[in-house]
Image (cartoon, rainbow over all chains, first blue to last red; front, side, top):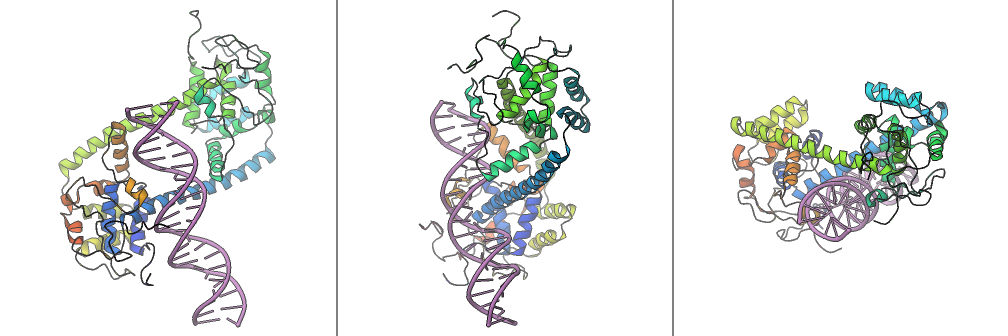
Length: 223
Length: 223
DNA sequence: GCAAATTAATGATTTATTCAAG
DNA sequence: CTTGAATAAATCATTAATTTGC
């Protein structure tokens, strides 16, 4: 190749400015015709082809996400450290503060009922149906990372709980970040609500739809 | 089945409230362990299994998307109607007003240069590279709905520009909705900047990377 | 100052995942 | 349930910044 010609597109400052402005304006995945238009405009400022525009948005979007994820991840890690250091009270107070913070009095009161009624008591009277108690389907309730199976194909598929890549890690952390509530849920329950719900629930025989044996596979019958 | 037992899960108001609150908080696809926790909590308010929680989020997510799509589609249609009825000025004034409105003097001036320089003139002196002019690769530049092909595999795939289903329609309309700028770009350029850019650009011979035939494969050499 | 060496950015490809249609 | 389209993630490859030794 001759030295004056570059192997790859090198955006001029004007092209970059315009692209960034469009990105800031919300453009993320322009259609083919949009790319055509953009390319036509940008070609006034230097050599450029449609694929350059296409790739630019792809990359910019991806790296933007990446940056955001990293930022959130760091925030979360700090937050979790603080959490582990300073917090020991029951998860319920956290639920309350979350719900109060989000101005949802209805749900907040629903959650409060959770703490009013001890788990072994019947559900609050506002519930129209008789209280049925949750029973673990797979019978596998050991500590953490259990691999439970359910009777539904689709549901079975979501069981993989181990992030396989760094991005998966980051994504799952972001998921947790959705709200303190999720963060609490993702904790080992024995940490904060020491074995209360699950332990207690197991005491009740399963009175499921088909009243069957839950010890092995109450719900894992072949379809 | 006895009449008192329903064949399918019927969420109690409390359960529904809590689920909706979690959804509002950002929960979309809870992991298995999360579902376990949620189920345990919700079971205090009535009969429920993990798969109910799982399906609830699946369905709620899907139907939420659907609702949003429909809403946006309707909005867009109205907006487009207004647009077609009332608008006739050049796209450039729109660009300017957009950029001014968004406090981006740099890009605004860049766009202004677009109108200062007629398309047949060389690019502004601020451009560090010699001006290379855009040339349509496929040679197919007829009016509307052309099917151009580019030399890059992935990019080639994005060329189909005709939505095939209602959902596709909705998606592409949503894409256009990204910003006023995109809306302008998606218009037929002959409408507002009558055939200026493309027409003029075609006058220039392509001076691509390998100065050769770019009509077929300028960048698809085997590795 | 300057250029070789190193590192960081980013354009371009390839691979994996998601989502919806049939 | 299978498949095709679309997108995101991962990766490769080149260019620009920068550091470093002279």
